[in-house]
View 1 (tube, each protein chain N blue to C red):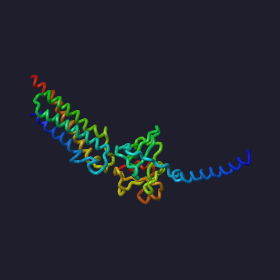
View 2: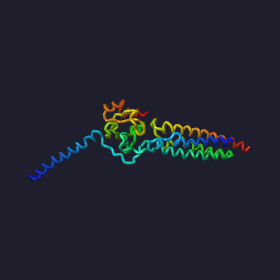
View 3: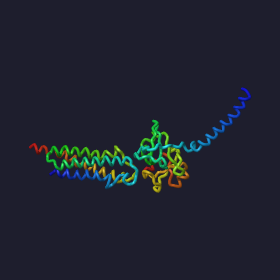
View 4: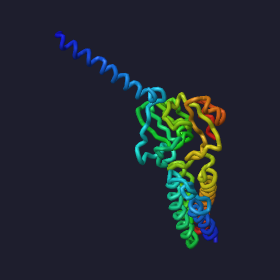
Length: 150
Length: 134
C-alpha cells in the first residue's frame, strides 16, 4: 500500500462515516415510528370497499402472514375485518392521530371517542404515546382495541 | 282469488325492496358518504325487488295452480336473494352507519316476508292443483 492509497483511504473513511451517520439521522424517525406507508391511489378498503383516502388519519395497512397487503379506510374496519382471525395479521400500520405519522399498530394505543368523526363512524383513533391517548379517552392496547368495536 | 291476494302482497313487498335502499331508508352513499359495498348491495337489491314485482304481477293475473307454483317459486328465489345479497356483497358493520341501522334490517324483514309468503303460495299450489284435477 503506497502513501497515496493510505491518503485516499483516509479521505474516504470519514466521508463514508459521515454518509452513514446522515442516513441514520434521516431514517431515525421512521425507525422509531415505523416506515411511512404510501397508500396507492384508488385503493379500496379491504372491509367496506370505499376508496381509502391517503391523507386520512384513520387509514391503516395490514400485511398478512401470507404476504398480502390490505388497506383500510377506518381503524374500526381493520379491527372488524380481523376480529376473529387476528393471528393472521403480521404487520399492522396505523396513523398516530396526534401527529399523522405512520406507527406500528401492534404497539399503538387505541381510544374510542364519539367526538372523533371517522370515515365509517367507528370513532376509534390510534396514538403512539399512551399519554396523548389518555387525553382523548381510555386507552386500549392492540388486543384491547378489538373490544372497542361497538 | 288466492293468486290475486298473493300477487298484490308480493308486489308491495317487491316495491318496498326497490324503494327502501334508495329513497325510504337510503344506504350510506345517498346520505353523504363515499360509494362502498353497501352502494352495490343497494343496486342488487333494487334489481331483485323489480324481479319480485314482475313475478307478483304475473301471479296477480294468473289463474292456474301451476302459475301460482312457478311464480311463487320465482318470488321465493328472489326473497332468498334479498336476504343473501347483503352478506354476499357487503355492508357497513359500524352500528352508526345508515345502512347498518336502517336499510339492512328493513331489507332482512322484507326478505323474510317475501320468503314466507312465496313459500306459502308454493305449498298451497299443490293442494290447489289436486283440487283442479278432481
